[in-house]
Structures are given as C-alpha cells and as structure tokens.
Length: 484
Image (cartoon, rainbow, N blue to C red; front, side, top):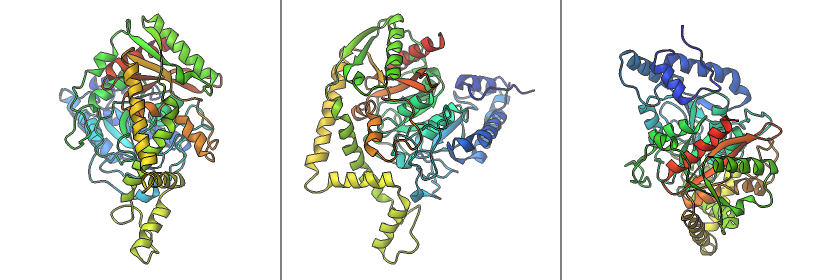
C-alpha cells in the first residue's frame, strides 16, 4: 500500500526520496495534488490552468525509471507549479492578462525545461498580477489570489499564486518572478521561502518581459534546503539568454549547510525607521539575536540613497514596461478587437480591451518618462541614481558578508484595502526595490508571526553571485525558528 504523505508540509527532499524508494509513485503523488487543488484552490484561486496530460506523462517516465533502477534527477517526481508569465508547452501563457487570453506558446522557458529535465512534474500555471505588475495579486484579469494563511488577506504580488500554492500544499515548490520584490514579498506574506537570484544567475529565456533589466526568475519552497536544491537546478548560463552570466555556479545545497559562525551581518539603519510595523521589527530583531547566538557579528551599515529607491524603480520599470508591452497590439497573438475598421483603431481597441488599469497606468508613466524633452529629466536621472544605489550595496559589502532587514513594512493587508491608492501600494516595495535595482541576490525566510497569526519574513541580501552565503544565513534563521 502506498504511503500517505502530508501535502501541506511535504518537503522537496521527502517527496523525491519517497518516489525513489518506491514508497509512493510519482503518478499517485501528482494525482493527490490534483485532488487537493480541486478541493482547496477554489477559495484561493492560485491556479489559472492545469497541465494534467503533460504532468502525468512525466510522472510515468519517472516511475518507469525508478522501477528500472535508473539514477533519477534531483527533482524526480516532485510536483511543481509555474507562474503564468513563463512559457510552457501544452499550457496557456496569459501573464494574468486578457490580451494574451488563448495564447499557447510553442516552446518552454529555459527554467521550465531545466525543471523537467531534473525530473519535476509540472502541475500547471499559477495566477499572478497582470504582466507581473502589482504588490497584492489583485491586478490579475482572472481574479485575485487569496492568502491561504488568512483568506481575507492578499498573498502579495506579483507572484501571489506561486507563494499561495506552496503555502496551501497545492505543489511542493513553484517558480515565480521578481522585478521589484515579487518573490520576496509574497513569500513573506504567505510564510514560505522565496529566493531572488543575482541578475543573470537564472535564464530569463521564455519569461514574458515586464522590465528587462530587473526581471528575475526564482523559486518558492517550504525550506531553505529545498530552495538551494531548486537553485542548483535553475542556475547557470544559457545561450538563449544574452543576459545570463558565465560566472561559475556553486553547489548551493552544500553552501546552505555550512555553519554561519564568523560571518558579519549588516543591519541597514535606513530600513528600521518610521513606518515599520512594530511586530515585524521585533521579529527581525529576534532573528538577529539568533544569528548572534550562532556566532555571527552584527554591524550597522548605511545605504544612504535608499529614500530614492522607490521613485527610481518606478521610473525605470515603467519605462521598460512601456517598451516591452508595445508588442501586444492584436496582430500577432492574443486578443484582437472585433469591431475595429482601421489598423490604428484595431491597435487602440485591442490594447484598451486587453490591458487592465494598472498596466495602462504604468505604460502611460513609462511612455511619458521616455518622451522627448523628459528622457534626460527622468529616465537618465533614474539610471544615475540606480548607480548610486548599487554603490551603496557594494560599499556595505566591503564591511559585511550579508545584510538582514525587513521584507515589507507591514504584514499581509486585506483584499481591497489599497487598490484605490496606488502610491500606498507602491510603498509596499520600499524594502525590496533597492536590491532589485542593484542586481544583488536576496531571499525571504519565515521568522515568526504576528499576534493575529499572519506570517513575517526576514530579508537576507547577499553580494552579486554570492547566493551561497545568503542561503547559509537563511538556513541559520530557519534552524533557530524550528528550534523554538
């Protein structure tokens, strides 16, 4: 009789081991997840499409290989969900937008192909803010995602579906994307681990672009060790992506297991000022105490240009969005307005009907920033400030090995609470966008809950291509949490 696994807490390593040892089949594990999705997801809305045929075919291949005694990949039989801004054969790729409704890409994103090559079973496509633009997953054309820890709360965005699916036991791990905090913030809100790799560490080929100099692909998991395993599979150069790095790839699983004694931990003074929720502050301070007890030294550092990070991000990101989204015009794929009599009218009506309010807002902002007479005043100036923000981090990392700070100023807020105030929504990114602009790596690790039971995450930032140290610190925070 097949072993019964607890899907809500199932780790990647436990799932793979059970399949390899024959205690469960990959096919039955996938079927159990589909059953749970059918039961639980209607109230969460994390999945936009299921790829059952592809998933079961892969599960059968894994089971056949296990039965034959063949050496299996590091993700053999592990059910994984994919954010719907990544292309995947056999499933739609809507990017959470009506303008791509019905589009089925003919190819896999490189990260998707790497997961399947490692034995993963790809369950389906996960809900997200439209074109990854949002901090709450309320901008999806297919309805908001609800936080499984508190259904009246947002899961964070834009990768809310990816974080919620892992938190709710609807997949063992998932892929998300992060442009200004879209992995780290949902991970913090949903109480899971989320990793932002260094820009260029994971291929962006097959990612439907929002802001090309900022977009990154990374994993959501239930533990730091699982995140390291996912990164082992995902990281590396890709000839299909000119921005992917040729830097050597470390053994992240081995790096995450190293002790942290002797590491210097930086605490940026600018991240602990007015506006930070007192319960989040207390949880971060407790995590710092735990690191001190594990042998780390704690040092204050300054990131003096932090106050310019949000406006800088929203100039650069919207400018790049304006350029990237110009391709969605009703001609090549996706929605085409039916009652347009001229080519210009078809462009206009297709974009008007296909894009949501937030996407339109960002296209307008970006087009304005790039327009004649304003380019130097806005876009060029923002790129100069981006350099100053990057130098802040480079300077700080000459003094410390990693930086620990909040992910968000508040816990998960209620659905609808900030939809009418874009500025307040944008300020949710205040602690995450600077790392995105600088291109460094970061992650969110659960470090407690509020009195109301809402998850709190701690943000750990590392040097460019030093994911290993970042994971070590994350594992130490996690170990202290589990030991309480």
